[in-house]
Image (cartoon, rainbow, N blue to C red; front, side):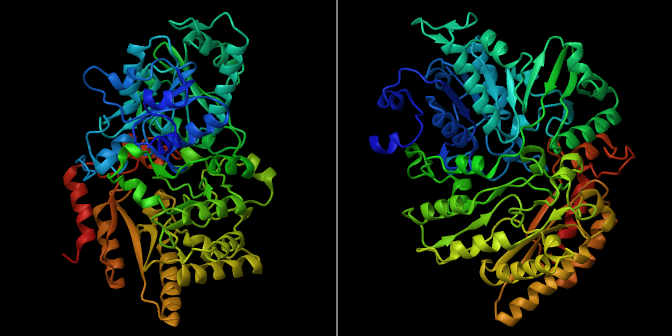
Length: 603
């Protein structure tokens, strides 16, 4: 048991002592169960800091009731507390669009619902602030990232300020946090090594970082990119050199100002050379620094090549963690998505620029999967946020540097985009010939508009046809999931999705290839009801279009407003952020029920 525990980052005082530690440099609190796998954010950040030479401990799913012993058991860290509420927004993870409790929490042992509070970012941070008033707290993960500015909260049905305000934390690291987290660690470590006068000292007299030292190192003139912090006052130069948004209070008074804010927020999130964003909240100023440049292939490889065990911590032996069951034999090839779908948070968190791993790194991970004791020869997914964007980027990078479009493929595919599917085909074929591999599947969503597009290049068009054939003949486990989302053009425009005619074209190709190869496979389409702009008659027309195709719809969803998407801002404010024109949204529970009912015409 000791050897097994030592392979993981420590989660208890005993595990720290097994390593000879009397304290940790960084203690990470996680709303998810601890799975030491590159798909789980707290494991990535923990391993990354470990590679920097720091002593990192993780407290997964601490009990926030009673005597709070889980928050006390590892003591004070030398540098900071980090909070990662989980791989999903806690409220999306807990509740459906109808605000009903989900059947299980996919990131908790045995799917239990009682392992995390609502809004763990706020709950954990407030507890730590009471127990350790002088220790810096850094927020990360999707919940904090997408709540970094004024945002609409569907579950409270109101606009809320940045999550920094109620949490009383010191900083947010937004997006995929490798670069800013490493920079924080290096600056704070240097401060201790220099015996800075602002340092604090613990009961044993050992130097550690307090809030004063933290603010001196990180919140001065040399601000760290991709972070958010609150200031009591701002220098005029900061205001003059930044994009100043409407204040939180102005947004509360006029929803159209919130909609106008969001256009700038989204554009700056998807630019290579973004501006600093500033927003006043009460008497304080919120400063959002521009994101770091996208990770290079070498930097991304480093993150994925860290010494993960790829397993849940031994404390969960005999228990099922649903999210881990789904990804345990999968491999992620890239990050980012240039689709820019209006209802999706991927680009707000990961950015629109594709960051791809090297072929060598991918194959190393696949070989590691083949050595897992329960592996039976099948890779469940060689994918990413969108399955077929690997290595795709702008031909002329200078054009990308001037671009502020949130999508590279809507309303039309950018002529500067290099949509070459050959590097991805090379990965598929290299994986499939590895010893121990019987078959690899693609479980991530496929953008069929990239496959049907005329690239004005014979080689790229041929590669798209080859990819389509390879995908359908060798990488579909009986059912291929795609996401047309709707059938009506005016709704699809608001969704930033292509015309439904492209779905018909792709389905025709799918059926022809399957028929010629003698394969019995299905396309499973994904649709959304009650999206902004969608009325009941639009759902009736959806049913009329889809019924003749013979689908019994399974992949369906009633639109759920989640923070930091164009669709949510449109739904909540009543105005489209890019036009500031009114847009209808179905909000009444009966309206939403009626729209959803059109998915079930066969019943």
